[in-house]
Image (tube, helix red, strand yellow):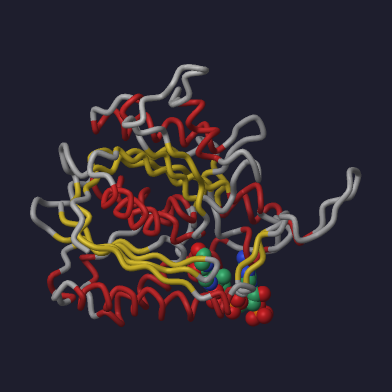
Length: 340
Ligand code: UT7
């Protein structure tokens, strides 16, 4: 379906505190050399004990709203992509809405039947969250062309890292991103099309516990199940296959070839995964943007974080096409086509 959908403001925010490969060498049996050659990651940003990722989501949202020249009262939808919410309930979106001063409840006053109330909810597509969010935004805009959507990605993976497990804890970092999506107004990027998918048969490949599947009582100690666990090698294979297939499908659907793509931004999980997808798609190296060496895998935020830096470097030229692709727990995946 052809939906007029564009990004009119974008912001990202990461914690100041960093965790370098050298820091990790001091607390576990790993090495800078192993991490860099196997993943490309050199550093990650993580929240400190007195911080929460919603603080950073707030900052990212303010930047996106400022750029789009949108005031809090104009926001109709606040959607948060996260697999690491601060609480099971309330949602991150309600927590962030309160911080931003968004409100549609006017006490006992009758709300006009024609006014759009604020819609707030979280969704969990793990690392594919941003691309899933673009499709959700398109769906809301198809229902209401006046919708002003604040799409946030807020991930705090460090609070679900088992720093005794070197196979996962060297990979992830914390970060938040935000963008304003509308059918009208100034466009930084047009969202031309999105394609998303999932397969629950692979649900056990990446898992974060701490939900309601296990009975717990006050005083119980935390088990390993609370932390992120991953079958890395199998995820690697499925990630390459999923991102390649979904990207080709999206290009084909839009009568485009790989040669029509000017910039390629994949979920920033592992340089070797991105390189494998690039090679299979037949894209040239200079079309690929990465910044995972500075942030690690920031799950749903990683594409927004890369887009923000690519923009700072002037890599989005008017009229050019960008292909985004992501992959994550579920398993979930998706690709999006933007023009700038
Ligand atoms: O965003 C969600 C999606 N997640 C991903 O995309 C992650 C996908 N998977 C990967 O990126 C890679 O599979 C990893 C980076 C997780 C692992 O890389 P790998 O090349 O697949 O390594 P491996 O799991 O095959 O392990 C090779 C060796 C093992 O030692 P042995 O059994 O060969 O003696 C591991 O124990 O490397 C060892 N190892 C480490 N050594 C030093 C695993 N982690 C570490 C470490 N430091 N941090």
